[in-house]
Amino acid sequence: MLNKIKLLQEEIEKFTSHNLDEIEQFRIKLLSKKGEIAALFSEFKNVPAEQKKEVGQKINLLKQSALDKVNKLKNQTVAGQSKEEYDDLTRPAETIPLGSRHPISIVKNEILEIFSRLGFTVNEGPEIEDDWYNFSALNFPPEHPARDMQDTFFIDKGSDILLRTHTSNGQIRVMEKQKPPIRTLSPGRVFRNEAISARAHCIFHQVEGLYIDTDVSFADLKQTLLYFAQEIYGKETEIRLRPSFFPFTEPSAEMDISCKLCGGKGCNVCKYTGWLEVLGCGMVDPNVLEGCGIDSVKYTGFAFGMGIERTAMLKYQVKDLRLYFENDVRFLRQFVSAY
Ligand code: DAH
Image (tube, rainbow, N blue to C red; front, side):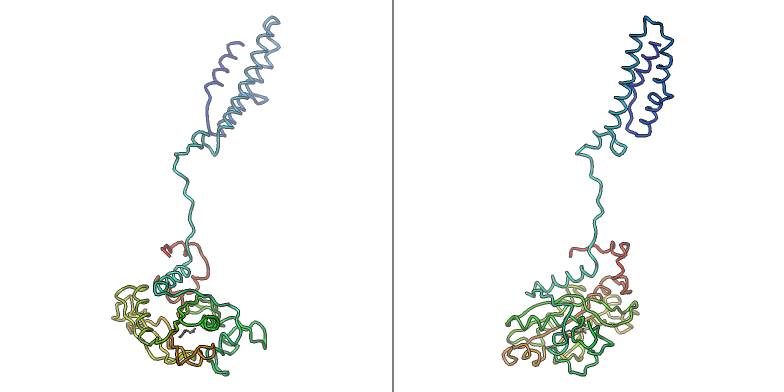
């Protein structure tokens, strides 16, 4: 009996593990109701009377040391590792997966950054607007089709409160408050009553630009946009301006860039024209300046507006607009950028 106790004592001393299952097996083997120490207790009645005291003490000590060992090993084990290993401050850290910016934010930030080098600041206008800021102050005639319920989301029937259809409302809000010189951008969300498809969405993003000062000319507009296009689409990019119409600019133009994919030779992205339309622009109509209390004889200015999704599509070649709104992390994770 004493020999058996000695052997078990040695086994307890030798045993070590940082695996919780193994520790549990060890506990069951020694300390459970049918374990080896319980067996010793049941054999105890056969021990001769004169040895009972010594043997009894030894079995109790054995049981205590088995319990201590199990508790000690359990306490030292964290997540399957020994505590020393776990607490090792020199161990390489576990990697924490970082999120990434949304591609629309990346492109927006890049646009803002490029224009900030030319002194443009940022003024975000409200998404919920009234007819004045979204249409009337921008020289839209009363019967203009864009004011129709079919294109514009009104907050209430018969009300003139609406979700802005473009970021041009930002121009008016800035001109009302600031005196020229003005150089500002208004980025933000816009809303139009469109069926959702790969090429259209009822929510999208625009950046509006406005520059008002004495002697601002169409040449300034063209040079500013050329600088922007070459910064965002690459140095080899060429631009062309086509005459167009917007109620708030006169003259108005649309800007195309040379197709990045085919270098202007013609491909299915540019529909074999070699050019891609990227923004609308023009010289701010004197009516708009006067409506905001700016002297249109002393001051002139230019404005432009571009879609951020459109810019992102051209940069990343992702042509289904819906992907920008679904927030599938497998899509979003692919965009890594300095912006
Ligand atoms: N607001 C126009 C749109 O949503 C874009 C635009 C065109 C803005 C010409 C401008 C501009 O400032 O001058 O289609």
